[in-house]
Image (cartoon, rainbow, N blue to C red):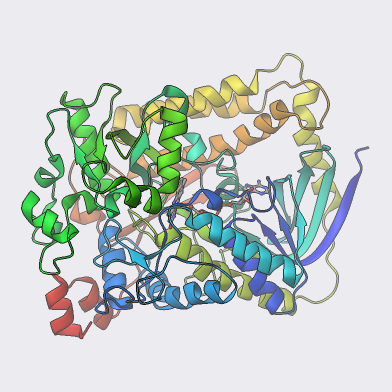
Length: 609
Ligand code: FAD
């Protein structure tokens, strides 16, 4: 019989990215004993890759900025499908969370008069992103990690959670294994916070790190947690397209924020022709006006390269499809002709090195070739807007794995501040819940043994399939059939492919020992990846319109019927997933006025923002 080690915590946090670390700190502050589990090493979570900055309406660069403007921008960018209460909590609290990071040692870039500097990003009306060059995620993780370790987290590194454990309908812990040794670990916990990040790896072309296999969505759904709006996947407009080995790696929006422009093969700045009706009047209409904006003229409007990501990604796709793309299937992003070399190297050091090292290209001299890459998932585990509690007692979710804040499309910079605002709320609420649970917790040994047997099954299945081949097939077909542009026939075909892959995912074969066995890890990853891919495709089929990160060739426009509907993806007791349309929660009148203000002038006239 397989042995396992048991660890006991009040709160178990799964994930050591920004959300997980902030949740752990908050739970410890409440007096909870906290364990943190991560697939990689502390300091290596995907958050470390974040570049451009964290959005918070601090008003350091433009005093006119405040939470109301951020509230309107976030809802407008999200196609109004965001949970209004989450957006309110988020936009009000984000500045405090940034200042708190500074108190804990984060060293942000400064304005000339010594305040935290803020940069422009798509969809934000004012410069709003606190940043550290283009390495903001690294500073965020370094600061949170130092603080969490000082406060006494117990970290389990290189440990993968395979299943959540339940007792009488509530979550009471998790089963995992140490990737280094293959040893099984049982975590008994009164509350669990999922902070497992995104799912970009279900697509072939992605900016996401290897950890982003979407485990948390499936783990939650498998114990009965509702998911929300899984059709909304963000394809970031600017990923590297050349050479093939680096395809998908992110080119930060900070390049456009610092003045970079998009051009097609004819040298035309095509974004001027792609301003959607809802943004008409808010963006520069000529290159001359955009140039004045770059030079600091406050009466000039922002360049259309700073439209939201969904808009820019689709415009790029259109240029390429219509034959005006670059040689390797992208378009050109030019900062070289806009800013001096020294400025580029100071403000975008990672981009400079990334292109030098990976593409043999000097971005201070030549334009980059860029194209869309799967970047972020707006949907996620459905949570309470105040506590981040899921519908399953004992289970909380925060960060990219949680849904609701970003609606149909996330604004750049709105994730890093999401992590600290809602990570903190989740940690506090989980600790409070844990404190109310009396007595010691017993996990069901039969459940643990069954899951261990399930996890080891690929070692005892010599005729099974190669898990790497299945992974390749999943990612290629999701890219082709459920990618940036979707239509009914392909989505239905993908559902059939997934049904087939689901069966095959439980019939893989691996050999060798359990220590550092990538074949085994892939065999277990693929089971969860197929589950979450199905949720994405089902929700995409159900939304017969185009909005934000969800674009349908057969329904190319937004449809008012879907304008007030969230999709809840629910698992029934026999394991099947269904999509339920649910009306958006009613927004109070005073907030509606803010959200629906026609422009910034109306916002300031009518609600004093
Ligand atoms: P992550 O940082 O992804 O951490 C997830 C954690 O969960 C990891 O520790 C992982 O090991 C662990 N985990 C996952 N599954 C398991 C499991 N089964 N068992 C145990 N542990 C598990 N957003 C911004 O706001 N501003 C930016 O400038 C920005 N730049 C970005 C640049 C890039 C290249 C990318 C890809 C994204 C960027 N984003 C940015 C988005 C942002 O970085 C992410 O949304 C955010 O970091 C997610 O943080 P998280 O804490 O939710 O999860």
